[in-house]
Amino acid sequence: MTNTSVSTGIRSASFTLVNDGTFTSSSSGTGNWLSPTSAGVGSNWWAKATVNTTTNTSLTGTTGGWTQLTSGEAWSAQNTATNNEGTGNFTIAFSPDGGTTTVGSMNVSWDVGYTP
Image (cartoon, rainbow, N blue to C red; front, top):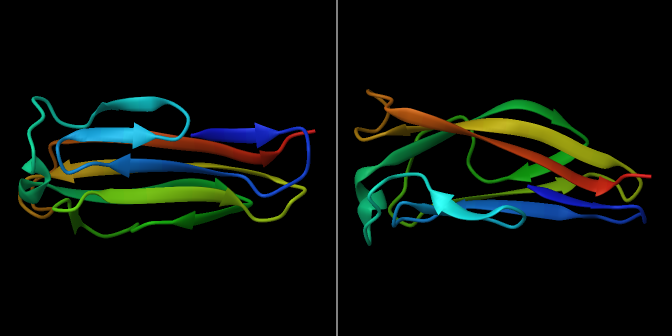
């Protein structure tokens, strides 16, 4: 997720796991977190986002615990001040049984804010 500018200001970027097995990103478009995709398949899956690094970032969305993807899940990263750059990444693990078994993962990185 990227949203940087050479002018000062608060910038944000978002990442969403959709309950049909796809994902959307404000900067990198779309893709699949599960294949094949199917309407409502998220009801059978859980995700856990673990923050690996973060600098100058306000991060919203559930982290550190398993969340059922019945309605999907979304995260947003925003720089913490108008004159800084917010960076970081987290890993999303996937489970078909609420966390007992982990069957895959993906990494999400961000770079938002002021970059002189």
